[in-house]
Length: 97
Image (cartoon, rainbow, N blue to C red):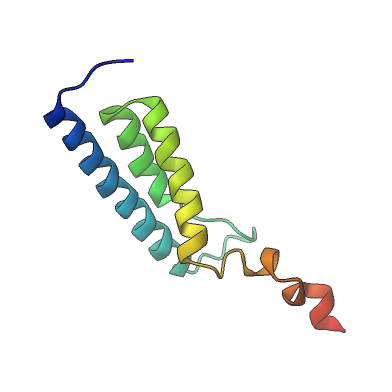
């Protein structure tokens, strides 16, 4: 593991925070864009561009951490994505009853 100076660590943490914020905003914007491609759940993948930038500017383990944080934080901030999985009353077969 590489040793970083205090200034470099601060820069990396700030960059990670900015990249996470950009990924969350792009993921939210992307969820609001209606795309009729015939395949349910298909999206553009705009936040993946930010992740590729993170691999280029930082390193692969940090990019993995950013990806995991994006998944967790988007699930917490946008509960509409996982509301069906967390509440059994929202499942399709319950709605039909």
